Image (tube, rainbow, N blue to C red; front, side, top):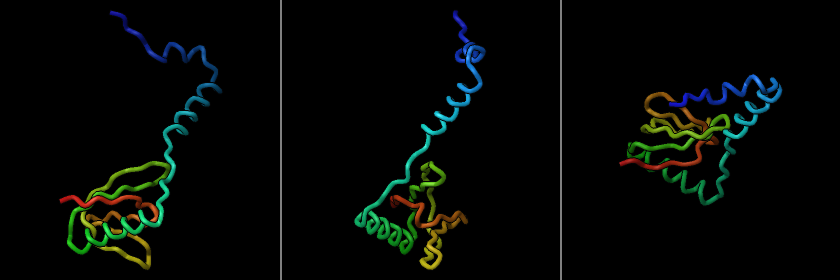
Length: 106
């Protein structure tokens, strides 16, 4: 059976500048751009959040944070329009600007 060392064997032939550039390229490639919502999508998102809050439904939020997207689930405890923040029952909070999707889980 052939036991290949993968990229380890090539590191000795690569200049440190090349290794650094490859790492930067990999980090840049993994970044995601913030989704842009139009007026209709924002209105739909607002309605989904209000329905989930008023009826105490569990909701799955799509969050954009630090060049990454993630999904968070929970029940909404507070929708604060003054501070523009959504707080889940377990204490996690998300600014409205970072939420780009909501799905009600039943």
